[in-house]
Length: 178
Ligand SMILES: [Zn+2]
Image (tube, rainbow, N blue to C red; front, side, top):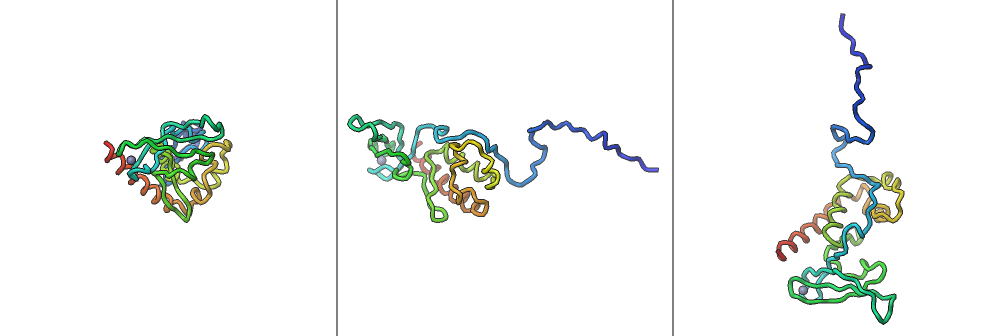
């Protein structure tokens, strides 16, 4: 007679929320309920220097003393030493000459700095789908306001490719300024 394995011996040692020993899919997972906003990436914004076309850094945003509704972003360039100023309206990423910006699916894909880029790389690489994003409860968090073309599963490879272009550009910048 053969031995029967008792199902009662199936140990349920895994706690709720603990990562499984083996990944169920080929893509890494990422929590979608993390509260991430632009402020999470720090205040630095990388822009194109108007003097030498290389990478300058915005570290300060001031309110104009003459018009308290107007804000000015102050940038400095490590390459040529130029100090420059840019208008900084609401939605400033539409008007600033962002350094980490490329085209993807007819849209502008951009990152304000390296931390933002790294977050996008992780997010897009995590294989998230629209249904997961719909679970996000915090409307202001970044994954909740990412455009649909960026988060659509069918565009992931193209978005990942565009992010690699930005990463390559950032790496070259970092090498030059070090
Ligand atoms: Zn410059």
